[in-house]
Image (tube, rainbow, N blue to C red):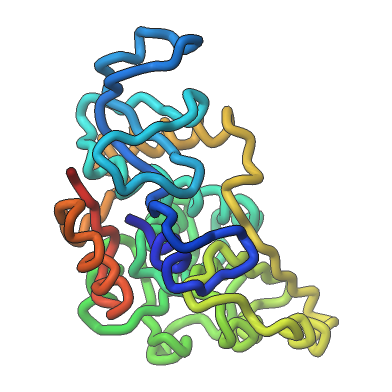
Length: 282
């Protein structure tokens, strides 16, 4: 399960057609047991990762579009795949959307979730001069340092006097009313990409903070994986899966729970105790 499942269930984001009674779950991994009439039967029996379209993954047998199915490397478990298959591409393309290049400094806001962890690893692997993170505890900060973070900040963006005062790139998975405070942490020509909204959307007038520093040429953008063409998504996902097999990237699994305990998984998400992903299994 991903943070988006909790955000939908909480009603944090509205206006997207989510109604009571929907089945959460945007990604699944397992073995193909049946295919449609026009689908290559060679898929039968293969281990795959698949995107459900946003909902419908909390089931024993999921139905997905053939175009949203990706074959898994033999060495990658289904549990790791489902913890990694969506979040890592989001992090990859969010950094690309920010036009990140080696030598730039990066701040990942809300780095303890699966997207944030992937962003930390990818920024470090991509040659960032510094990779700062915001997180809620020293223990989480230590784990993020093991994954490539160079500076650990608290949720407000403070706590490390040696951290850069400003950043070329900020990947923000949190959003919410504090987003404008992080616009002030952008360097001249700095770019903030909002790749999540765990805390909801910023206030409607948050752009006023950008205008107040007009001469800094700062910018803010949103990013959704929905805007990336399927072939490009699949190619990058294959590369990221291969990197995970080689041990260059990590699928961080907080816990594996039976599907019947989905409510407990959501309680842990709401309590803020999850580092990485909880994976539900039938």
